[in-house]
Image (cartoon, rainbow, N blue to C red; front, side, top):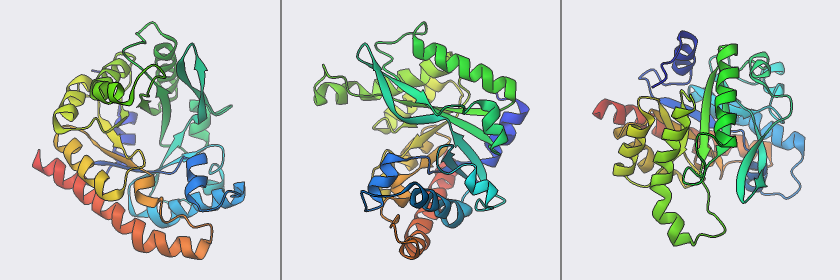
Length: 294
C-alpha cells in the first residue's frame, strides 16, 4: 500500500463529502458531451459554456468537479465561473487513443503537466490509462507511464487519480469479454497500485463479490466507481453496492447530466437545476449511507 502524503490527504478531503465519501462531477468529456447536446454542430464556445453551467449549477452542490484543460480550463477559473468552495480535478488525457500492436494507449493533452495542473488551480489531477492486465505486465509501456506520472505528481505535491479502462479485443467475442471483465478490473487495480497509484477511478466490476475483490486488490488505496454512461437509477445501485464493499465513492458524469445538456442555455439551466441537482443529492446520500453501513 502507498500511504497518502499530507497534501494528498488534504486533496482527498477536498473532493469528499463532509461524511468522507468521494464525490466528483465528471465533466471532462469532449466528444461524448457534444453527442448528448443534441446538435452535430456544437461549437467550442457552446461546449465551454455547457461545462461552465455544469460547474456553476451542478458541481456547486457537491464537493468537486473534473474538467479538461482543452476547453473548460482556464476559462472557468479566469471568468470566475467555478464556485469558490468547489474543488477542481484537472483531466490530463486527450480524447481517443492510439493503437500499438493491437493494444490501446492513451494520449495526453499537449503541455498539460502536473505543474500546469497546479497553475490551472487544480486540487488534484486525473489521467486515464487503457489496460489489459492479462496481456501487459509491470515492464510494459503502460506500467512505465503510470509510474512516471506518479513520480512527477509526487514531485509537484499533487494527488493523482489513476483511471483505468479495460476494453474488448478484436479477437474476443462479447461473451468472452464479459466473462473476464470482473477479473480484469480487480487485476487492473492491483496493477495500478503496484505502479504507485494512490487513488483509482474504476468501472463497476459487476457485482458485490467483484467489488470486494477490487477492494482487496487495491490494498487500501481508495477507489471511486465511474458511471460509464449508464442511467442514473442503475448507477445509484452500483454505487451503493460498490461503497458497501469497499469503494470510497463515485465520479459521475453522463448519469447525472446526459439528458440535461441542451444547447439552449435557458433550457439547460432549468434541466440541470430540476433534474441533475436532485440526482447529485441522491448520489451523495447513497454514498454517505453506504459508508455508514460498513
